[in-house]
Amino acid sequence: MTSRRSTPRWLADAVMYQIYPQSFADSDNDGVGDLRGAAQRLDYLSWLGVDTVWFSPLFASPFGDAGYDVMDYLAIAPRYGTNEDAFALVEAARERGIRVMLDLVPGHTSHRHPWFQHSAHDPADHRYIWSDRVGAPVRDWIPNQGRRGGYYLANFYPIQPALNFGYARMDPAEPWRQPVDAEAPQANRAALRKIMAYWFDHGVSGFRVDMAASLVKDDPGLAETAKLWGEMRDWIDATYPDCVLLSEWGDPKTSVPAGLHADFFLHFVGRGMRSLWDNSTGSRGSWWTDQACYFDPDGRGSMAEFLSAWGEADRAIDGAGFVALPTANHDFSRLTCGPRTRDMVAPAFAFQLTWPTLPVVYYGDEIGMRYVPGLPDKEGSQLDGEARQGSRTPMQWDDSANAGFSGAPADRLYLPVDPAPDRPTVAGSQADPASLLHQVRQLIALRRATPALGTGGSVEVLSDGYPFVYLRGGSHLVVVNGRREPGRVALGGLSGAFRPLVAHGAEVRDGDVVAEGFGYGVFEL
Image (cartoon, rainbow, N blue to C red; front, side, top):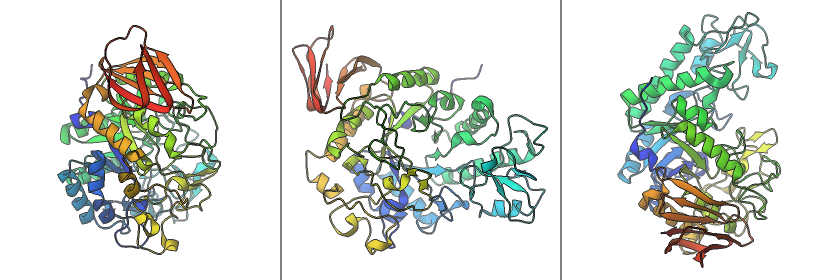
């Protein structure tokens, strides 16, 4: 029997914030965000109350897929600055009590990475997966332009050749397959440890791991992939015990027991997150499904799907890690999208910040930045019918030119600023005590000050309808109404005095919980 893994205490209490670096803050007025710009905004993040920041990929890249096509894992892309800028940002963040996590892309590189350029010409180099003929699936095998000839396996886009971490099963019909313990797959594991060690040694607190389930090929049940991450976790625990891995796997019940510290509920695996806020609602061209979700203005959803998925994951994890719950990210639409306006999303934050999951706020969601439809493709953002660029627009800081994001001419911006005349800004929201931003800040502060509302407190669901009502830690009642119609729920045997800690359109009255449309409240018994 293996011993139970421990998790760094700071992670259990973390409130995370994702920064899309191209779009957050531009210090040199070239139209693209950078690290010095982000460093200048650290005081805002400290004011907001987040204590962990995750940057989407910062590494050198040709940017065919917005940086997820890495050309050098040990170098910051010049558009963002230098390695020294990254080290300075990590230190400045730490002085404010904020940890920095980077985005790691372990399953593939850019086709312009020196590793691939060498492998494309040398038949003895098996760092990538090569064949002399097209394998299956056909669409993933790309003709090689190098002297080696043949075909390479792509992990996502054709410009992203898959690194060779081996196959879980051998197949005589595909003699190019190598087992996971072959020399090249083991060398790639060693390279992955070297990359992580470099950034850990420079103060980075962890990685969000892109496509974490994609490494070992033909892996039924992802058993060999899980063993790989378990091996990485053992190494981290022994060498960098205060550092963590947050995976883009999308299946916490599998990935966290395997060894990842935490994993997201995501839009592409099951209905766990979509059943909460189907962020495609009203956004044709970006994950259009129009399926019912709980935080739907018309109240067509239910918490049942989420509760089932979360319960299954929570039992499998058994306290050895965490489920992470994002408001959105760079790959799917924001909370504020389609018919759901920023005046409707505060209850979603109230839920996210009082449920025993790790909350991850996508930049700008805290002020109600919207998904912007109809934008042109930018660096691979248009994925078939999925227009991811609508969630990657510049951060809206104030009412100056380009919303305070950059001093560049508007036509040089990475993406256009939201043209809506009523677009929210940080400055305007800070000046309005009733703004969504102030509500989110208040909820973050309440979570940080109240252990019962964090990952360690117990949870008991009292009503899974409208409003959704639950008890945290046996001491705090949370009420969340995700629709525009009011709701009322009898508390039954729960009695006593209820002191409101945060209350916006919700109250306890005559033994009932009463919530206005889009109302929420947190009460101490």
